[in-house]
Structures are given as C-alpha cells and as structure tokens.
Image (spheres, rainbow, N blue to C red):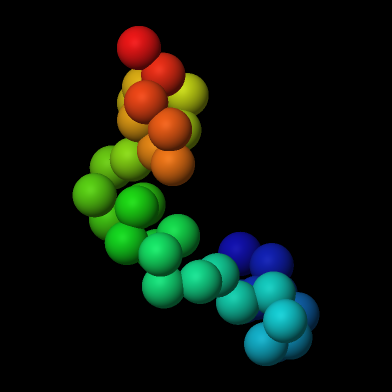
Length: 38
C-alpha cells in the first residue's frame, strides 16, 4: 500500500514477502509466516 501511494521504489515489498502473503502465511493471524507460531 505504501508503494502504491507514494510511488517510491524504496517502499516496494520484496519478492519473498509477496510470496508469503500469496501463500496465506500472514504471521500471527494465520499462525505461520517467517516463523511457526504454534
């Protein structure tokens, strides 16, 4: 959202972050993200 609003390439999300979101790995909300929250 920040990149969309500002157009600043420094605010663009990384490929890894986009991949995790597409897989539904949303962190504590889903119990998975970069870490396993079980």
